[in-house]
Amino acid sequence: MAEVLLFHHAQGLTPGIAAFAADLRSAGHTVHTPDLFDGRTFGTIDEGMAHAEAIGFPDGVLERGVAAAEELPTDLVYAGFSLGVLPAQMLAQTRAGARGALLFYSCVPVSAFGPRWPDDVPVQVHGMDADPIFVGEGDVDAARALVEEANDAELFLYPGDQHYFADSSLPSYDAEATALLNRRVLDFLDHE
Image (cartoon, rainbow, N blue to C red):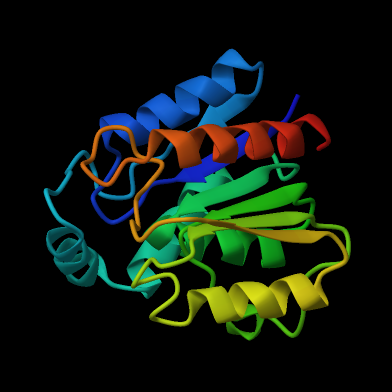
């Protein structure tokens, strides 16, 4: 079974993120869900991003992610939803011992954290094919470049235009897409 460090999105550690982590735990995996926002949640992405700016975006978010990882073993799968992709991707690329990366709704260019993706770190990227943030802001292009470069990488696009589609506590939730995402994630974790 895998041990996962899962970072929340800009609306905070919502009940939907907790439910996602619980699903992974029920499949036998160990999942850590640090709260980068110290218990605060937000009604919109804009409100959450304003808070992220207030604590220091991106550096403050990255520092909090690194601090959460320091208390844990190094052989982790790093996972992040949107904003949480930043610390997850950075740790997967830079912390020795990473077993994998799961990047939901976002992906940044590999060059943001190093010269190349580590050869022995498998990765999955998940997003909707008409998401104005994932597609419109270039994350899908970074994901495609990552898939081209990495030894073991997959990009999964789901039909739809929602950003936080796998968070069951938000109106953007898409149960059908999330069910498929969950199957793919569990298959990935079963092999790590």
